[in-house]
Length: 93
Image (cartoon, rainbow, N blue to C red; front, side, top):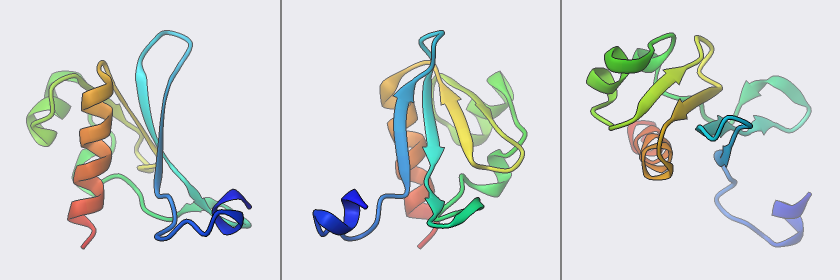
């Protein structure tokens, strides 16, 4: 609704926020009316990977996890979560 009201183009693909423990999250925005379909998911080769293994795959400091479905990931740092979103956007092109 807000995207339409404010004529946001292109549509938002990810949101960043902190969870209750202080970890930064990068979460995919779903397609309107489709709860399990993302506008854009996190890269497939990151999915289901955690901690040091994820840092090696992403080459992004602080990477902590990406859910197996690719709809959410976590990073220790804001800059890391932002970089995860940026890389996901770049690799989708």
